[in-house]
Image (cartoon, rainbow, N blue to C red; front, top):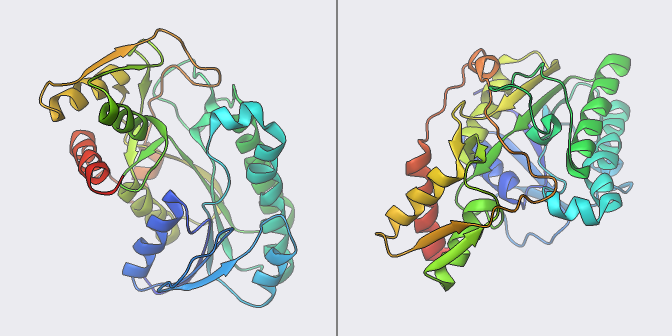
Length: 302
């Protein structure tokens, strides 16, 4: 990959921190920013709020080839109880970013991380990028609004934009969502209960594959407003995940399901990945291998 100046917003989070290391490894000049103190880093770092004039200062004093927005909130349950905060983090911040790019760094390409939550409960599977957006949570609605803002700035102002919709991202360092919840509960008990029936399904994609996909988009896409699903293209039930977990613990653990569906949670997901294959992407991490890797990471670091 040709050396580029890449700005990663949300660089201290799960997704952002992996992206920083991926693009540093490729020899890119990486700048990160987030809300927290970073301590000593091997890249340039700014502590800023995306809802303040700090964003204009960031772009006013520097130029970047690519800006990747890995910031924002990724918690559906939180969005249900705090819709205003979620809107600020996932929608309002985006117009601040794009306006700063428009005013100070118009040639910067903007790679926006949305979510498969914009689809809600799809009527058919696998889901293509052209499927209607019918979100079922504030988080999904706000991600959809953020995509509309991206479309606005591309169509009206000519900002170079691409959008990805990650499905169920997982990997070492993730301290929330299904795998984290299962590891944490199984650490405390030999018998645990999860929400749902076990028949719910997801399309899991390893964090390394997400980073590789972003690299492919940066190298091959024209940033003309295209939207890309980020997934493996494989539907996996939560029962299958539970079975793999119990096998990793050598049959000493039992996982049951409550039958209760949490508000805002979709029932079944599986993505069509034809579009991301067209930019040179192919999944590389098998889910069973990724789960075993995650369980080892949890045992060593949690």
